[in-house]
Image (cartoon, rainbow, N blue to C red; front, top):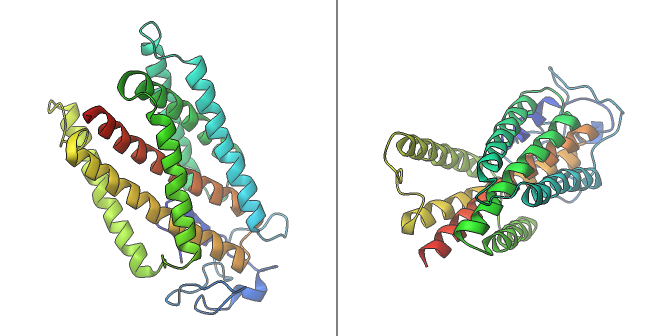
Length: 284
């Protein structure tokens, strides 16, 4: 089953023979390695046409995913801290810092698109995305902490950890079951959410100062909470994709795509938690 995370949607191309042959033709409904799986889907890594070659003959492991994810997230955190320290948002430097942050966000978005449409993962692209994303997050967080809601960044980081840990526990306990219906519902909800976000940006850009009202008050908090819930749903889908990839023997290099997808989702959750806490603190 493919995740609706645009990064993980590329994993289905990585289907080939090799160490995965033990699992290759087993339907997803069968128990593999003791891991319950979606009984409505078929193995996304089974041999088939348009396969992605395995470069080292090895299958991905959970350790591979953890190491690559730690490296990618570590890059985000490191560049965020450095940009916070080296790109001050005081009155003298705020214009320059904002310009660098916007440029970094655009570069990160471009790199993410390039990687999303690549046939194989590129560690350089993924780490580059993480570095530029970290610059954007560092300046944004510094600005909010300095001018809007002091101390809210620490709360947002803790909130992101809490949401992630909660989803992981719920997924491991099977309180959340990622099925085709679940995936379709989340995809539809995310599409609506993004369309509203684009409409809000357009209204803000063309004269309606507060857009659709998602930047303050109860409506802004509600919109942010919906964003957090969507991020949590995407995280559960990411866990499912990683679990299936390990169980069915996806190529080891696909661990970089796992790191990319998980990092993208965690950044989403952090931004939505930061939005909710910022609105809540500024309103009070």
